[in-house]
Amino acid sequence: MPGKVSIVAALVGAVVVSAQATNITCDTSLLNTTSSTYYVASANKTVYDIAIEVNRGICDIGRANLMVDVSVIPNVGQTFIIPGEVCSPDWTSCIIDGPGTNDCLMGGPRLYYTLNGDTMWKIAGRLNMTLESINSGVEVGANDTLSAGQFVKVPLCFPSACDIEPYSFTAGVYKDLADEYGSTVAQIQMLSPTYNYSSYALDGRSPPSISLAKNCRLLASNYTILS
Image: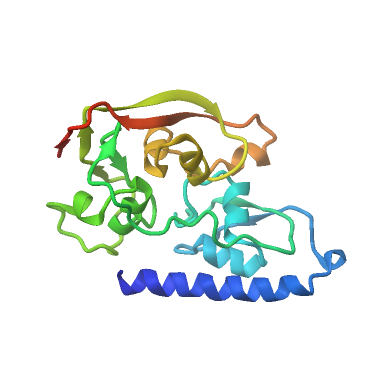
């Protein structure tokens, strides 16, 4: 595993240990349970940075803002909803734990649109695919930052399919949906590329409708990989 990812994991682990220790003596009367907003004024500020600064769990912030993935680096000028404090802030349940084991994507789509701060390592994790399968022929390192707005062609398992349905996205991150409905974070992202819907909640609008990939599967026991 690349060293950069190990360092991030260690930092998150240290925060989790600290949060667990705090929770032992947590006095709920001292918590700031009021939601607020956070304006991103500088480039390269991560959701992790924001979570540390406002003393909230990174996954709590991600779910309050309906994010694709908390590893996406916010844009300057973006406003985040900051949920109220809790005794047990969530630092782990939304984290995508590195690349997966699949060598192709079941059901498509085939073109991945890069987001701010993306690397091939992050993309492989969101696709639940091996780094080697998506990095073939791409002359970038696993942790080299890609420019936002690029297209990465994803190897497709053939024959395969997903069911695609409209879905009212009211709470959570895309990992919650992928785990529940049998797809991947990247598939939902490719079908509904906006990665942060906090403006809906800020403006009091109805939850956004996204296209949800469900029940992604092979259609035959033998398959080929369309590269």
